[in-house]
Image 1 (cartoon, rainbow, N blue to C red):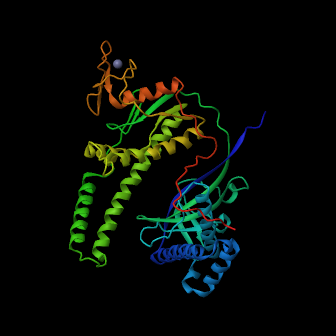
Image 2: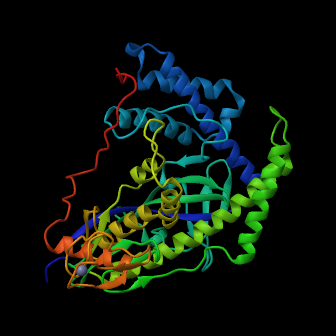
Image 3: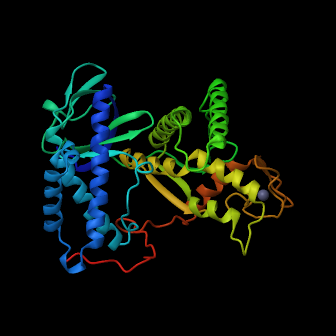
Length: 426
Ligand SMILES: [Zn+2]
């Protein structure tokens, strides 16, 4: 019997941590120290003449700062090294055109995070069907929700293991994101049917075979009413704030409550996206989507002062809907899920797919009745149906007639114009 082909896969898994108030405060302090260290590195880098910039020198300064400044000591040495490594990598990303220059990290705008670069420090144990324990440096052993079988203990080996983690904070509290390396058998090619998918206006996802993927509201009516009340209360309190005055505890509290509700909606949405994309990747062998430039669609509606856009309100409503459905996230999920099930994800150019008739192939002016209904005005055709379904059929047709966009070889590189000449590390 021939050995199955194996491939190495790297992915992340995020779990919620259960922390006492003291533990949470300790990780907060670590995150602030990490951010301050980044800012100090950034200052040092900017002030040092180009010819003197080096990793060794930066490392020396970091070590000295950790000896001199008390509150830097709360940050574990490995995490401090990770800040330096990330900073240098940020410049490398900038020089190679993948990102903008690294910049100062402000206290309230930066997501809080702490790196745990080495997996062996974590010492993960499953203690219950639903709970695991993990060792956090300078914090201690804490519990986390066990929702996925992690390669730990006897299940871990050189090929399947946790290589590191990162602590990240959002409105729902601190989470741990594990970096997992796994070696799995290459899946057999998926022989399922082909399908075109359109990010719809009236339905979240319209499939070319007539299936529609629906979902309800992310918040119940009670929750929506509460969110509205909180937003109104925040606006009122903000209006009463004098210029230059600090945000009051009451206002900050209201902001937090609203943010928690929005986070709950987002979590429910992501859950639905995961379930739906998994079902699609399992069922279909080839999934075709349109290449949408969401960023362009959003910026173009309002236009510029010289050339103001038309139908701004109408388009921005549409943009909101596109954003709300988070189409980009759906495509990302489909990309890796199709690959895992042995399927293919293809992209076709977007223009015209919603105006063209999928029965006769002609674009006749006035064919689209409304956002929801498509009626072909071509004499002798007269096909009518759901507008999103029509677009999904067009998308599949484009793929079948060889219009699929060929993905660029290797990693996609987004070139951005540099504002200043990039410095050189030497
Ligand atoms: Zn037609």
